Image 1 (cartoon, rainbow, N blue to C red):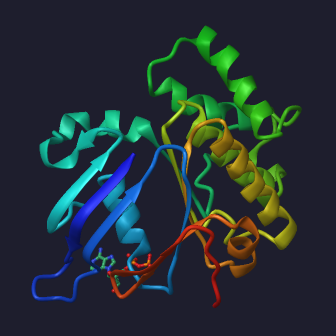
Image 2 (cartoon, helix red, strand yellow):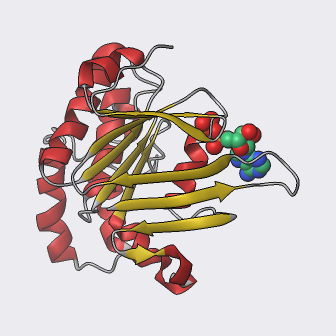
Length: 227
Ligand code: ADP
């Protein structure tokens, strides 16, 4: 599903590499946690996957798409395969829960009829049925993150990247969000989660990849994390 072969990213000429010959293989339907201190290179890795950044050298293949031959006009196709959620939710404040999720389908050119049948299903999946007409400011942090997750998965991506999705949430809401990510994973989506929360990592008992100074320093099947 995700293949990196000796990938290096240097932002500034003669600067230290943000990623230094990283090789990595993630199978379809895996749930992988990416950990590492601030500046380790986690965001750079995620940005390479979403093609916000290009590697300085090395090979990246995601969902059968070889980035070496990827044309700019095909980047939207790639992004369809990858849903993203972030610590700060990035919802549209003037739009309701329904509209926030529907927006992802509108820009994809779906008809209103399709939107009316698809959106409620995803809202149900994330446990927000009954809140369709609420605006983001009327929701708790955990509920806002659920909207963001609904929007990220409504087009059924193969991969969900969750970059510090619990960074703004209290422990209870954090764990609820993690359980939702596990549910989405069970339905067949590869999940790539970054977190600084050791309790979550240790409770999840999933594959943990640790990055330090741009290198993978450990890759454990049922990893743990100490801060
Ligand atoms: P993390 O997400 O683990 O905190 P990053 O991938 O953001 O780490 O950063 C890795 C390294 O790359 C850091 O030294 C950071 O300063 C540098 N870096 C990240 N983005 C840029 C950029 N756009 N331009 C220059 N340097 C960058």
